[in-house]
Image (cartoon, rainbow, N blue to C red; front, top):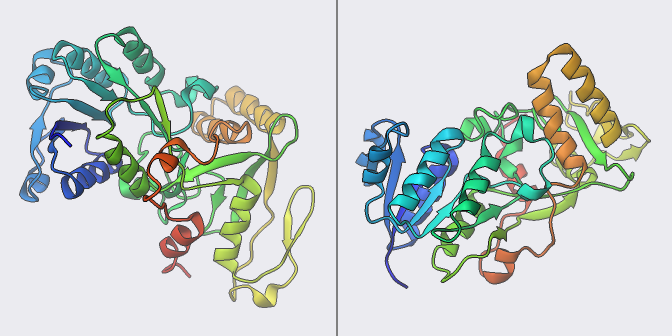
Length: 333
């Protein structure tokens, strides 16, 4: 295994989790690219480089000797980073994706955040720089106490707060995109960001990269996801299925004072109607949340299981969603 210089662009939660995994489990030289000085990270032994994404010379200076870039920055900053990487003859580039398969993304106007342009630019330069998209589905951390924004992940997405996506576990409500446009049960793949980091860092030592690499903590239907959250939050309450909701039949077995309110089981057509109404009302925040639900309903966060990296690295055993959720919500009454 050769030692390489790896740059992680960004200081969001995902970037720092990946950086820590590189720092703690490899001998690779790590540099963190940041728009501002990071004395806290430097005091922990990390090498940090301040970069001005509006200045090509600043970016190129920060990439001297870099073999691989892992990006968590989006928009114009990522485009300029790609241009600088090509100019500096960086060998490999990981764009800021870490979600579903880009080719399936339909709500680009609301969810893209410049990612399609980055992929197009990497394709344009494919003869000069290798790249791969890491596909992990939905982060477990979307269902975290206080949301994934508490980990500084998805801060500007519009669906990073607690309860923004499918289930509001604290208030025991849910808007579940359970059916696709053909009325089949919708599926999704989920992975913890910590397991994402383990797979990404292990892939650094692969001699060549395919254009996409999948990883998965767990694959389930949206219905099973809701049932898992219910079982963790209300213990042994029994639930009876109705076309539009689940109703608890055994309140004595729920946590005292807590009841799961009716769940809105949605399909693509109804979500699209709600999207039209939100567009008419000019309600952009609601549009962003609905866009993620439509993507989920249409199975755009689902892919073949076992995933590519799970098969390639069977010694990496991801945490199950139930174990993760139980641990994450253990202190919440």
